[in-house]
Length: 281
Image (cartoon, rainbow, N blue to C red; front, side, top):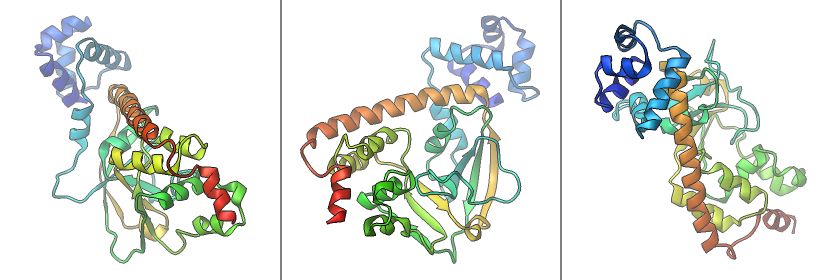
C-alpha cells in the first residue's frame, strides 16, 4: 500500500504536504503511509481513489506490474476471497470453467479482476512443478467451449447421450487441465453462445480476436501438492476500486469487439442447441 500511495502522489506531482492538504489530513499521516508504518483507513483510501478519478489517473497497470514476476520465472497467479489456509486442495466450486480444482492464471490482470468485487481477497504468486503429472491441454475451439458448457450446467438436457458423456469424461485420468480463461472480457460472449444468441463461428472468431490468457487447473491432490506459494499480498480497498474500474472497461471492450465480430458472422455456423440436436442424430 505504501508504494501505491507514493505512486499516486508522484504521478500527481504533489508533495506530501500538498496531498495532505488536499485530503484534509496531516503531512505526518501521509509520511507514515509511505513508510509502511500504517495503512490508510478505508475512508482515506476512498479519498485517494476519488482524487485519482478527478485527475483521470489510471493505476491498474501499476498494480499489475507490481505483481508481475520476473519474466525469467515461470510462475502462475491465484486470488482467494478469504486466503489459503492449510494444504492447497482442488476444492473450488463445481460450476467453474473446468469443474472443481485449484485455479491459477498466467496473466495477473485476469486473476486480479476476478476478485475485484470481494471484500478482503489475497493475491498469490505461485510456482507449479508439473513434472510427472498428466496434463490435458485444451486448445481454443469448440471442445473448449463445450467442456465449459458441461461444467457450467448448460448440457444437462443431453445427460446420458454419447455427446454428454464425451465431455463428462474428457478430464478423467488427468492431474492438470490447461486451457484459455473465460475472463471478464469473454464471460458475456460465452453466455450468449450457451443461450442461443450467437453461433459457434461467431464465438470462436471472438475468442481468437480477444487473445485470452491461459489458466492451469490442478484437479487432483497430487497436482496441488506440487504447488508452492512464492508470495502473497492482501488487496486493499484502494486496489480493488482501481481494479473494478479496469474490469468494467475490459468487459465493455470485450463486448464491443465481440459484437462487431458477431455481426460479421451472424449467418455463419451453428447455434448451441443446433449442435446439441446434431449430436443426437
